Length: 127
Image 1 (cartoon, rainbow, N blue to C red):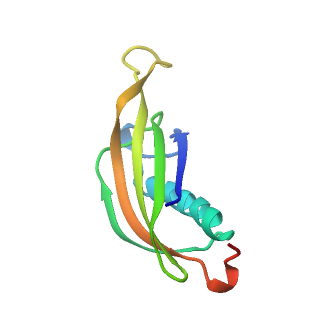
Image 2: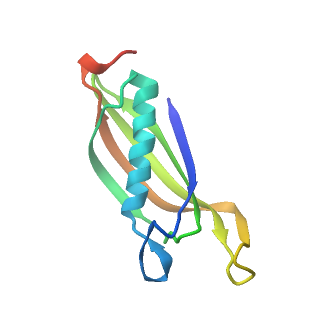
C-alpha cells in the first residue's frame, strides 16, 4: 500500500486558543495534504476528499510542537480510496529550560487519528 508523511512545526499562527493551543482542525488540514499526495502518487490526480468517517483527538498540540502526519491507502474501489491517518507529536518545546530548548520525543505522542474516503473520478485517473 502507498504511504505518505509530512512533518512540520506548529507556529504561533496555528495557535487558536489560550495557552498557544492549536485548533484540532489543523490536524485535519494536514491529513488533507497527505491524502492529496497519496492520490497524486496513486492516480496522477489530486482527487477529492469525500468524507471522514472517524476522527479522534487524543492529545493537545501547542505552537512550537513538531507534528508528523502520516497516511496510507488501506482499500481501493474503482474511484474511491479509503485512507487512514495518524498525527504524532515528535518534538516538543521546553520553555522551562530556555526559549529555544526542545526535546526530540523518543516515543512520539499520538495526537489525532482519522479514517476517510477520497475519490478520483475515473476520467481523471492517469495511472
